[in-house]
Image (tube, rainbow, N blue to C red; front, side, top):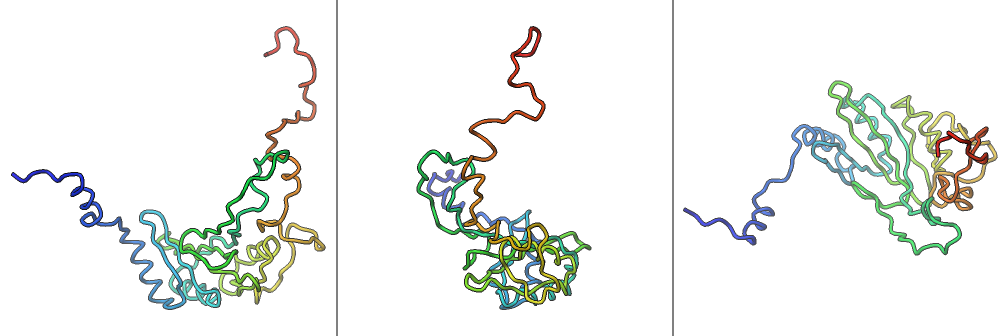
Length: 229
């Protein structure tokens, strides 16, 4: 009868003999997408049992949408952007009466990495299988332009308008870039991390310093006999 492995042998077996978790369905989908997109892909990832991420070259952003639509991913889910820059103003819980803490300014891009501060994010789905893909691309720091998806997915129209308004990204080929939420003379891009939300700088949000009474409340009236204490 063989002796049981010691701890060192057991740990070695975990790194050499135990197969990595796999997701046959999503691996197959990614393989099909990789074959279709070729060198347009910068990085890709399957998280077994969860989802698929594909990062493509900036100049291939619209062409990627065309190819995936032709592959059957005809349902447009969403499109937006993300600014990976850590906020220079800190979190809303920072006490404005205390000195600002030293902040970590390292940009971490999450799944499939990135080379620029701002990235596009989008998701498309194959309605016959309900399987989707998360797509990413870098937005150039010195020229925030990407091609519009509106001629491929009509639903991308207002998503791109929102990203243009809130992040300052121009979508080349979009038929009608105009404001949705902000006045036409508004300056700045509120969803960029370096845009100061002055109300939160003056007072921590959602009001950890004090709690204002509701209109018509009787918080200032003395409690009467029988009132809850």
